[in-house]
Length: 136
Image (cartoon, rainbow, N blue to C red; front, side):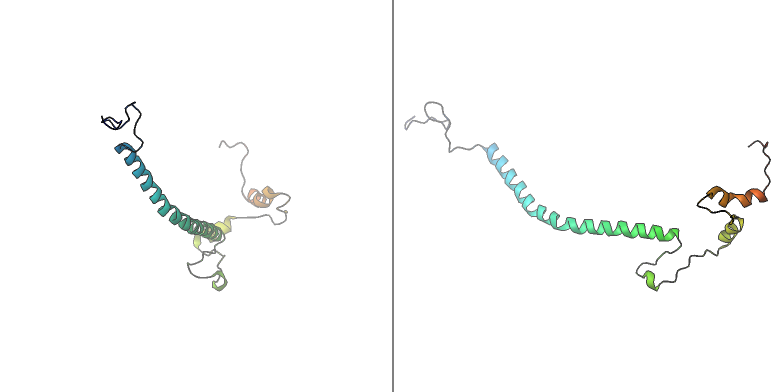
């Protein structure tokens, strides 16, 4: 016990020696440094990739909504071709379309803005007799 220190790493009065670090503190410090290094490497990579990924996602979302709206009006665009160079075929000429169109009997004497039900249904009601007392 010469020199004022005991064998436990503290001075004679029981105060711990500041120069001694235990293994647990070293392991914690090493894991923090390792985590910091990973953040330094991956965070900038993520920051660089995120705008590109978001732009691609937004472009795909817009293209899908445009394709969906073109399908509704019969103008499906082949991938890579432009609508300016594409012939628009908006008239359906299949048997199902012709049959459906033949069964539609719009009353063109009625303004659809004033009476949509009459515009769509008046001719059908005139052409098809339905008994009021028929159980449905």
